Image (cartoon, rainbow, N blue to C red; front, side, top):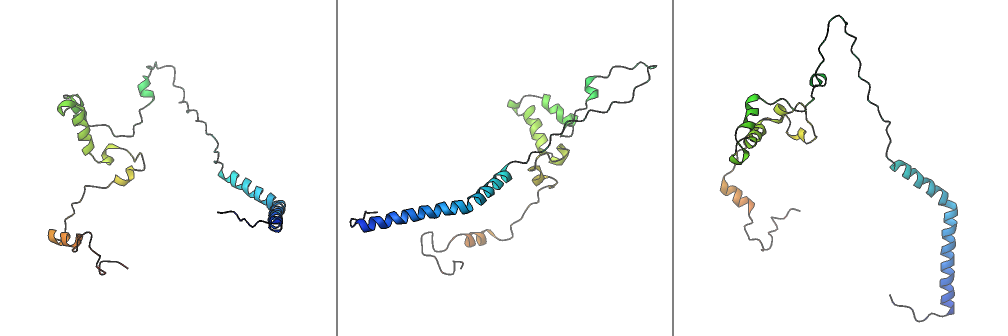
Length: 176
């Protein structure tokens, strides 16, 4: 943007008054609406704060009723006290035996075990869907084979352009 060269005293005073008038308008607007704008900003900031939920403390396990002292009891092993909660069903013994038969380098052992487990449907391996992505394949069943109805030449003729890649488009090919 080029500067105006015909800047005389009259034009300078005009711009000076315009600048002062805009400045006064801004000050008046701030005095009139400034408190409302600040209140709205505070309300928006308060709405953006994350909701803080109360913390839940774990409940103490209920103690079993005291056993009579007449019968001496065996000390329970730690493994029996806390049963292992797994997300998966237990593996069949025949499948587990694949782990110990050979090495993965020879496509046996762990390699064969994992490929065998992979063939099972997710419902047969897991008790419930663990992640939300599991729901896409959960209880899907075996894949259905889709057969093509049309012949190969029909698909080729309908897919490719008849007038070449760089030719002008036929008006009948354009969707309006």
